[in-house]
Image 1 (spheres, rainbow, N blue to C red):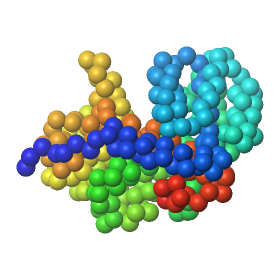
Image 2: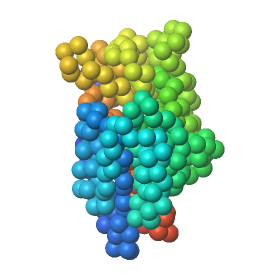
Image 3: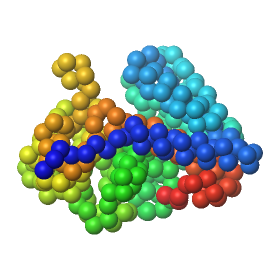
Image 4: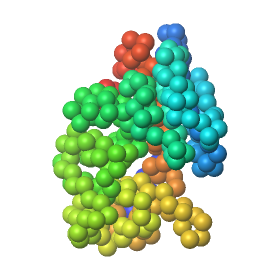
Length: 295
């Protein structure tokens, strides 16, 4: 069979951002400009890059963006005060606390301090519960990006067997819920699953999100499978690699995401979509009038 076709997350994310920008323009015409606040604590170089990219994407979409840069020695009380201040600000519709935080800070307490309707990362217990109950809410950005990418390529989810390798609260568990809601059959595996290859070989869709470079090999895949690689790892040569051995996997897959340029850009695009959704709902504007569907 020919090599698998590329699921181009970069191009797809650009299309999503274009749709979000149009929705933001319509919302602003009705008197509300979407507002995103990003809180960055410390000097982690990767976090600074991520925040800069998010700032640029949000600004390009027509959002009002503010970034709170706090020193690494910021106390838990001071950080919580900033989050609560943003939570009380009606001009802010989305709050993102960039993780990881310095080790002396309790990230879970900080995340739970974000009002659920402004939790554009979809990590508060309220949004986790809404997802589990199948009720509309703000969904975690990376899992939502996986589903959006499949939808934009018109690849079926209903009736498919999805094997997710990884059980994190950021990706594996919420993605399982999203796939179940779309009538897929879902198997969750992880680094301690016995005979992981056998599970992957039975999948129509394999999602790798376990944080082990090149774990998923080509001969682990059923010919014609769809492969979504969420992993971002630094290889021995300094280049970014995923959790899938791309070259061997592409020989068996029908569709596959690259790293970089696959799921990563979709994550930022869905962050913008969540912020627009929050802004619309806080303003009482119907989601469908902005090109958004209830999720």
